[in-house]
Image 1 (cartoon, rainbow, N blue to C red):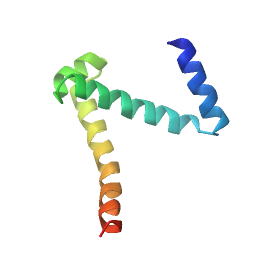
Image 2 (cartoon, rainbow, N blue to C red):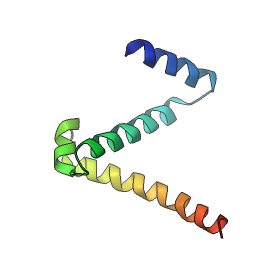
Image 3 (cartoon, rainbow, N blue to C red):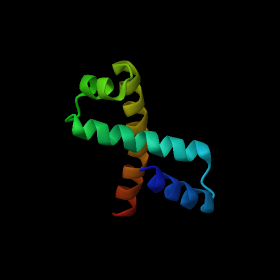
Image 4 (cartoon, rainbow, N blue to C red):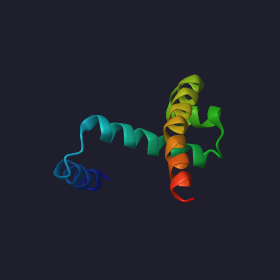
Length: 79
């Protein structure tokens, strides 16, 4: 796994991806995947991730808020 991560990091550095963006995307995808494995159950997912349920709930809400404008913009452009 470490070798795969190092390869991905090299690609991101070559693409000039900033650390904050890389960490944010990793966290978002990690949480999304954990939520899917736990059938969208917040308490089980929070336990699996080792964070408080309220923390997970706030982060999920923030991700959903960020994704909504993109969906609306796509719908407007598709009309």
